[in-house]
Image 1 (tube, one colour):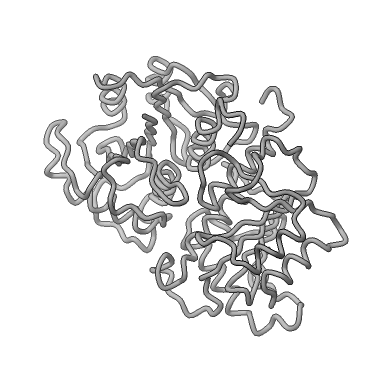
Image 2 (cartoon, each protein chain N blue to C red):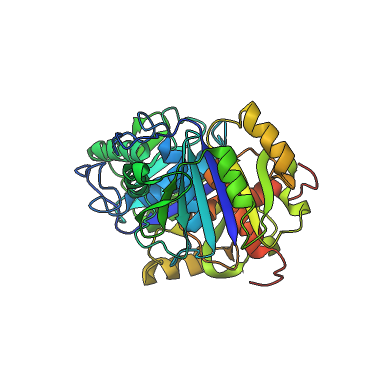
Length: 202
Length: 202
């Protein structure tokens, strides 16, 4: 399984935002929506073996589960509507129990540290934690792990607390090329790297 | 210079569409907006040496010129607003003369064949035309040309006429991996391929 944790620093934590202003009043939710798009969409299908965790303002985490997703469309607005719907169910997320808001989409009352712990310690798989960062090693030099867990930041850099947590937990710090890319583009390149690795023909 | 021609089969050819329904009534303009995003955005800047040509319904072509762009933002809605603004100037595009609608954005009364001819025959550069298609050769096997011109289709495949035109004109037909990707993801991977090619360290 491929997993992506994306830290949304300015992201909304309540559902009272307009779908007409995702890049403004909704705290750059557009960035996170494009990350969801990049993580899941193939031309004619969805990558079922993918899980995405959007950390919203260090309060909630919205999880997208590829194998269960039913209403995901590629455009930003409809993905933002799924996030808003998840936030409408935030009161149902009690303790660390998730609340499902639509097929394959659920919300948890967890910030970044708790999400990372929850994901990294999952019993069903032991993911390798890779931080995607401009100071990392070239991804081409890293043997793709079987269950990669990529951690990315939105349009802001990781803050000090996040950085020290990642320094402690991450197995690798990688970058995808000489240029510094947006988070969603980075996800696309990481997928492509995993897709093509080991192939001599395709 | 890197150039991208994206053929929008369902795209609007008049400005009377709502920015609230890009994936519906606006003929999947969301796809083309994401292509513009992928073509231009780096994390903290814009790729100035890039030109994008959006072919709208085989009637008009909206050109984005990286070195002149001033008001491009990464979200779909604001890019769609630039396209709508270009379409508001469509009556000013007479013959093959462009009409500029905002800095770096102009509209031409040209369909796919004319745009391809116009771009491929430009005197200032002699681009190598690469069609991005699922039946192409792996991009990793192709030596990156100096001035690549990538031609992609939106969510529909090329139609028969486009296909035969490309068969006649294209230097290469390439694919970016074993999976078939959305057009915007393909652009991201193509950029990354060109960015990283020849680098042993970055």
